[in-house]
Each structure stands twice: as C-alpha cells, then as structure tokens.
Amino acid sequence: MSDTPQNPFEAMFKQAQEMSQEWVKSVNPAMASFAPGMAADKMWPTVPAEMLEAFMGKQFNPGGLDAKTRLLLTLLGLTIQGALAEAQIRLTVRHAMEAGATSQEVAETIGLAALFGGVPAMTKAMELAQEAIQGDEA
Image (tube, rainbow, N blue to C red):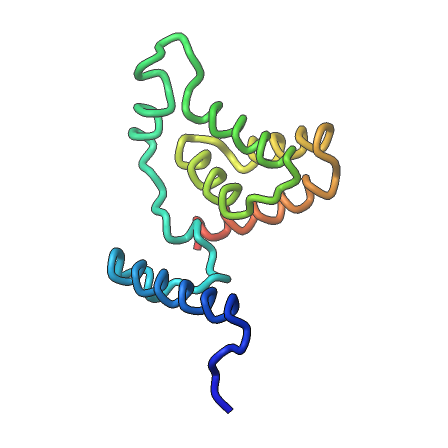
C-alpha cells in the first residue's frame, strides 16, 4: 500500500503542510529543529531591563506606568483569561523578573487573578510561573 491519502482534501492538506514546513525552514533555518510540542517561549530571549523600561516604561510617557507594573498587569490579564496562553505567561514572568519584579510580586499578582479568573486558572498560572522562575535560576 502507498502512503498517498485516498481523500483528495487529505492529500491537499498533506501537501500544504509539507510546503509550509519547507518554506519555514528556508526562511528561518533555526525553525528546522522546532517541534510542535516545544515551548515557544524558550526560543524568545529575555529582553534586557533597560530595553523593557525604554519601550514599555516611562521613556515615552514620563507620568505613566513603569515596565514592571505593565508586565505584572499583563500577567494578571493572561491569568484571568484562564491561563491558556502558557508560553506567553512564562515569557511575561521572565520579563517581569528582568524588569525588577520579585517572585513574591509575581505570586501576589497571580493570586489576585483568582478573584476574577478562578482558582484553576490561578493554579495553572502559578505552575507556569514556577517553571519560568526555576528556568531563570537554572
């Protein structure tokens, strides 16, 4: 038997999938080693605190929020949504820590989100935050 799908739509889907994989590899060779189950946040470097403050902090809005506060608010929102965006939560925790947040502040932010998003979302976000924090310490 051949590996050729009998359903024409299945064949088109398989061909499109192969073409897109080849295109991604030709555009960014580093993506050749990317596996769908791989944590995408680990591929994104942690932005230095100075850059976070410049682009997300008071650089362009002197009376506004600093980068740490903005990142903690982002973490709050991601947790309230149900902690579905795992890579984004880990990445936000890493950047918040880089911007000066403590582990305690991250935990308090996630704990506060339980009031709006529920305990399951808080529990999942706490697990993801611990992964991010322990990954930074390793």
